[in-house]
Length: 112
Image (cartoon, rainbow, N blue to C red; front, side, top):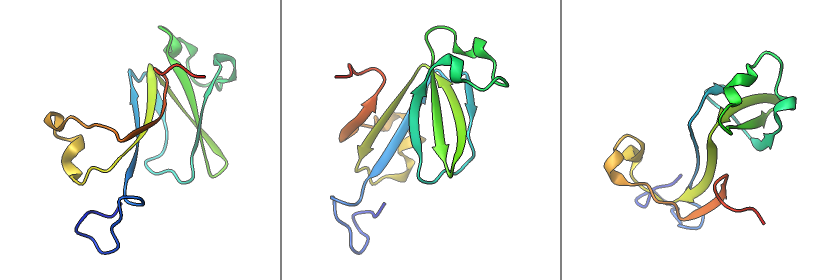
C-alpha cells in the first residue's frame, strides 16, 4: 500500500485488503501466502489429521489454497474487506476502531 505522502499515491490503488477471523480453534497456515483462494468447505472434506471436534459450536472450515498447497482455518467466522487506513499501528491500538470502506465478504452477511 502506498501512503498519502508517497509518490504515485492514488486512493484507487492504495488500500489494504483485510482478512479477519474470529473464534479460532485451528489455524494451520504459513506466515506468508501469495495469490490465495479462500473457500468454506464441509466437515467431511477436512483432512483426517485435523480433529473434527474443533468444528463444534457451528464453527466453519476455511480452506486456503496458495501455490497449489492447501491450508485450513477453523473459526466462528471470516470477513474480507478493504480500507484506506494510513496508520500502520491500527492493529495494535484497539482504540482506533478499524472501519472498512467496503466489505467484500462476511460469513455474517446474508448471501444472495
